[in-house]
Image (cartoon, rainbow, N blue to C red; front, side, top):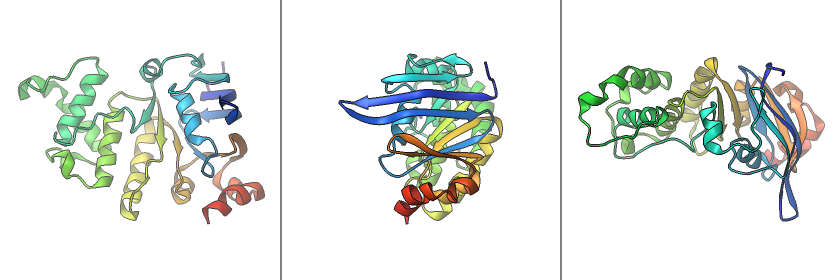
Length: 250
């Protein structure tokens, strides 16, 4: 068992009625790193994420997380093991305050139901953890704001806080800056850097500036296969990557 890598895929294949979306992907994600998965549209990035989080079953191949084969585990099982995809499991209610949204997520994470009719006092035991999570995503000053009134970038930060409530060891971020303006991208970049200090992060992201700024290692997909892997300097100077990805992005 090689514990240097928290996640590995071995010969991962996904076929849809004759179309191969993922074609033999071997991926290794090092513990404590920020690993980016990039590639042109249709490269298979989202399908790989869906396979890793068990929303799809592979046609062939294996997925190993923390040394355990999770290829045929259910989504809830891998989430409980600490492999969590952000912005999909988050419990964000637009007409609750930011504070109460994080309380909901904490109660879900503990396996308890959230009861809207409970008194404020009955939830006080969660306050310290709620505020710690809000601090982690720079939302303490927004704690009493109704979520629907938050700017878009702050809503994404709240979604990240609700995801962190389940205490993930490996956090999968699916295009975390999609639809954001420049200021929000900068803020979310710093949030990712902050939350990654205690976790491993695997992200799909189109913003190459963010990828260059954050990533320890980058895997480039094309037509469902790994085209290249390495540091940003290595992949950005790779002629095949320049042709397949950089050229498309220009």
